[in-house]
Length: 623
Image (cartoon, rainbow, N blue to C red; front, top):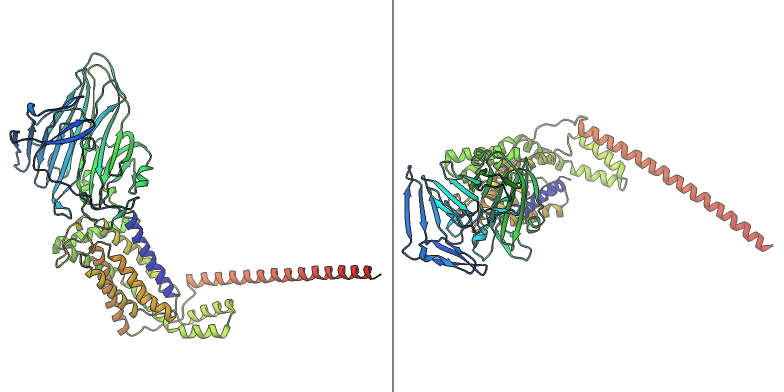
C-alpha cells in the first residue's frame, strides 16, 4: 500500500511539472539584430523598406547632468526624404542611453522602437531586446484616434524636441485645430519612465475625436528564426514549429489578472472592460507594460495575434469630445525590464501579480526571499539553492522521520498480513477487519507513511515554482560547467546524477509490496523522472538532486539508529474513521445479503407458481 501511494505522489509531481512546461511562460525576448546605423523607414505600396542614412547625418549630443544618461536627436536631412505616391515620411530617431539600457524612440507615431537591456544577454550573447517590431506598424506605444473627425494613426509624423536631459517632447498638429503632444521622461526610477499624452482642440468649434487607443506589442520567435533559447522548455506551435520566445498577453483589470499563452487562447481572448490597471507583454523573465498612472482607466482591453508572430494589445478609452480650446491628458508609466519582485512592487500598480508563483504562492514567496538572503551572503545562487534545500529539509525533518518509521513498521508486519490473507482466503470483510486489528496492536498507522508525503508536497511544489519563476537565476552561473541556472544542463550531468541518487534512495526505502512492484519503483520511476529533468532549468534539477542526496543521508542514519519502542495504537481519528467505514461496509453487505436472499425467495416462489401452472396445463391436455 505504501508503494502504491508513493507511486501516486511521484506521478502527481511529474504531471505537475509536465503541465507547467506545457502551459508555462517562455523565456525573455532576444534582440534579433543590433543596428549600428540609423535607418529610414519609408512606405511604398504598403511595404516598409529601409534606407541606410549616409555619413552626412546631422547628430546632436546632449549630456545628462549625472553623466550616466545621454540623449541624442538624430535628424534626417531634407534631401534624404523618401516620397511615395501618398505622403512623405521622415523618420528621426531619439536615443536615450543609461548605464544598463539603450532606448530608441521614433518620430513616426512618436513610439518606442527599441529597448535594450545592456546587462542581460540572450543565448547568442547579444543584449536582450524587449521590442522586436519588424516594421513601423509593429512598434509599441502607438496612440491613435479612431472614428472621429480627425485622423491620427501610426504613420503620423511628429516633431521632436529634447528640452532637458532624459526628456523627449513629441508634438503633432493636424493643421485643422487638433494638436497632440507626447512627453516622455526617463528619470532615475529603474526600468520605469513616464509617458504622458495630451490631446488639445485649438479650434473655435467643438470636435468629436472618436475613440483614443493606446497599443502595446511583442514579437514571438520560432526556432531557427532568430530566437534565443528556452530557459524552461519550449512550447509547440499549432503547425509543429517550436516557439522559443513567447510574447504572452497579461493585463490587470480591477483585481483580476488575465493572461493567455497558447495561440488558441490568444485568438479566443475576448475584449475585457473595466478599471484597467495595466496591460503588458510578458516574456517569463521580462515584461513590457503600459501602466495607468492614475490607478486605472475605465476602458476596454483587447489582444490579437497578428500573423502568428506579433501579439498586439490595445487599450480603448471612452469616446473623446473636446470643446474649443479644451484639452485632455492621459498619464501612463512604462515598465520595461526584468521581473524582480521587489522592483515590480515598487511600481505599486499590482505589477508583481505578473509573476506566477502557482497555487502555493504564500509558501513560494518566503522561500524566494530566503534564497535571495543566502545569495547576498555567499554570492552564488547554486550555493543559495543548496542551503535553501537544507533549511526546508530541516523544517520537514519531524514529518519525514515519522514517515520512515511508519514505513519500517509496515514492512515488518507484512509477513503477518500475508498469513492473515492466506488464512481468511476470499473473505474480504474478515481480512480487512483482522488487518485493522493487527495494525492497531502493532502500533502502525496505515497513513503514517503517505500522509507526511502529502503534507510535504505543497512545500516542494512551492519551491519548484519559486525557482521556475525567479529571474534572479537568469544567466546566473553556479560554477564549473553550469553557466546559466535558468537553462538546462548542457552536458546533462545533473540529471544523470539525479537518476543515480533516486535509484539509491529507492533501494534504501522500505518496500511493502511485491517484488515486481519494488523493482519498478527502484528503476522505472527514477529513469522516467530523470528523463523529465533533461528539459528543466539546471537550478531546479540542482534543488531536486540536493534533496535526494539529503534523503539518502537521512535514510542511512535511520537504518543505523535503533528502532524506538512502540505501543499499540490508540483509537485515534484514523481508526475511528476506519471503524465507521468498516461498520458501514458491513451494514451494506448485510443489506445486500438480505436483498439477495429476498430476490432468491421471490424467484423460487415465481418458479413454483410457473411449475404449478405448467402441471395444470399438462393435466388438461392429457384429458
